[in-house]
Image (cartoon, rainbow, N blue to C red; front, side, top):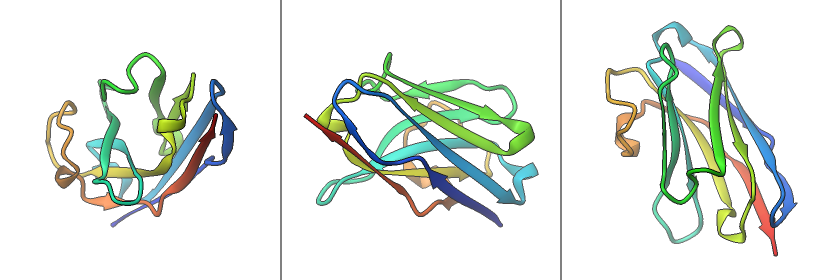
Length: 126
């Protein structure tokens, strides 16, 4: 079992920055990949970014490429999502996910992840 807890979501003005954190606990030694997804009411869960736990290889959705940065601190079992130049369309509940299988980091499907956090709300005002 892996438990994930997101934090850092809040109201921010367009053009601003925000950093989300996801703390993992439990069977963290088995983690292969961690990712960030986001979801708004009436829409499917959308891939944002992912990172391999050991090698640090990253992948980003086209909509956030160049603005968001995913990183991890293995010692703290924590993954981060630094968001810059935020836009109103970035408003969503952001979820952290952990993958315990050998799936390529560039895969964007949420079905490849085994555990999910409860989400943290990010609201970007214009």
